Image (cartoon, rainbow, N blue to C red; front, side, top):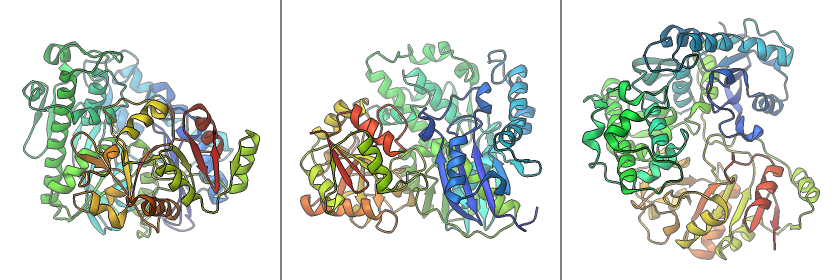
Length: 568
């Protein structure tokens, strides 16, 4: 396939969950967004065989609108899954499955046939012929490309760790210029992603609650259950690992063998015991051991000083912090949308750079790639809801003052972030200097478990005064845990004296940077507690989403565009 006349590439992820879309124009990322922000369903949809046909039409429409084009103008559509590869490898590969579901011959056939219809469904919806324009890209290739092609590195080691692609759970690769070569893979059922999903449910949470288990792990002692974990997972020196699926039974809701080894499964309303903390700590420790060994192996293989990470496990900021500190790599870059959402970006650049053989010309310096709204659009919503609002001389100065006075502030500004972290455009902000603010925020707004930490945003040029560790791009996206050096910010300091930081730069988010500067003028501290603007729902997307969440929670003020809204 030649470059000639290929300008617009649409990337889509929709096969399992975290449905998303992105648009690349002439090798530049124009827009990227997750479907959940529009349909208001977490993860966009459930990861079931029948849900393949639920495409992210809202996300696609936003991308097309942002570029001012229609689907007829799109030259190539990339989809982050290869149904042929999945079907060949997954039919009855193990004895633990439900008939008609994942892993069964009947279920895998149905899944294959539904995926093969995606191009027709998409073409019919937009009334275009996608024959010759639609490309299936292997899932892990999408992850790997999302982690490498948008970095400034000419060469890099690349690691993808997740639940499952088509059949593989872990991919080690090397990137050079506009090519990626996979050098080693680990296949199902040997999957860290599935291990975390299974144990998240065993510990009484949902399969999507790895972040809760990670937070809980800091309270436990990994040595208590380490020997017992070795009954179902073996780790080799080079990071390769083997899981006994006869015990874990990933494709079944069966915990009998696990309970024999570790004790009864926790129900969601049961109290959290020391045993649960220790089990979480063991899971975290084993994950760190495996991933660090894999990274060291990649370092020896590639001789590169650069490492790029993607896959759902790459959202584990504690593991990432250990990688930065304990491996030979000088530069560590983590895709902000490291979960499946990021594969939409990956497939678009895989097609542009490798398939079309175009040189790389784009660096993803921020994640502000979603919808943004004018003051006039915001004003219409505020007046439609008959809210009292005012326009201060400076929204940054006014907001900083309100935060310093102990208020909970919803902050809605600029373009929405891509990926699962709120990075200062769809955030709830409070003063980090008082430990009780964490509990107040939990009680009044977030309704989260008390063992889960909140994250700090900090001016990048002041970060080393408050936080330890090596510099890394991962620190821009709350994707690396680091030690806290100051006792001034207890509300963002976890039980193990770490924090998952976001370093804020003037060139990538001027308004949020200015807010931190104003807060520093008042308090002497260039740090804010930053959590996502939501309450048991996807992060808000539109001004109306923001107003609805503001009104149904005990947030004190809403700073939206140039306006301040107060309930008082």
